[in-house]
Image (tube, rainbow, N blue to C red):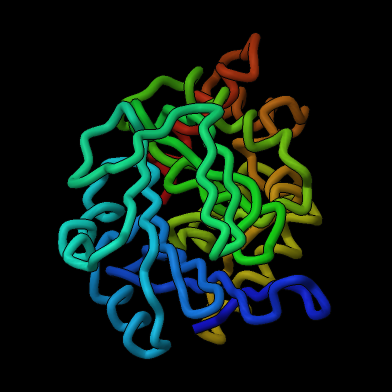
Length: 273
């Protein structure tokens, strides 16, 4: 387990954000400080319960981004723990939600040095939300569920290309050093596709090489950063001429707007082998 900790000399030397692997490629993110914890998108309870027992932690909160089972499947079992609060999207049906959230709301838990703002980011699901701000001494951070992945984005199960493009634009304007805590280890597959879109992108080539090295060592490729995604992720580069031309070649016709470019890219990624 690789911990991402606050910088040495910072305010929170005993705080960390931990990736808890779940299923085959999910990450549950655990925000830990001073013997307490919150978790983001616990698709299963087992990894969380093991962490609590191994480190003697008290679970304070669960933060949910959307309703899919691999993100909420552990909520009912974890709800047996007394004193927890479950936060989640106001417009989605969840196993439990004590505090429904929408754009502009905040989640503040002083014991975890957690202060997060909520963004509405529909596309993958109709009511998907994300959390951005500070957690366990780390700032800025983004917990984005299945909206943004390193080198990719979520499939459009319930939303439109225009909605997803707008959601990704909300991420794109965040500070470039924002650490992006995606919910899946999809990086290598995504970067292989991104390299087909932009084969001459040197930043992408270097990142792909680094990601392969991390996975060969059994390490997560996450978190990414917003700056890295702007430089390498085609879905955040829909106005870059190289990406536009690649999307148009793939579609066989010209595109008038970034949303049209995004839609072609999403279809391309859906079919990419």
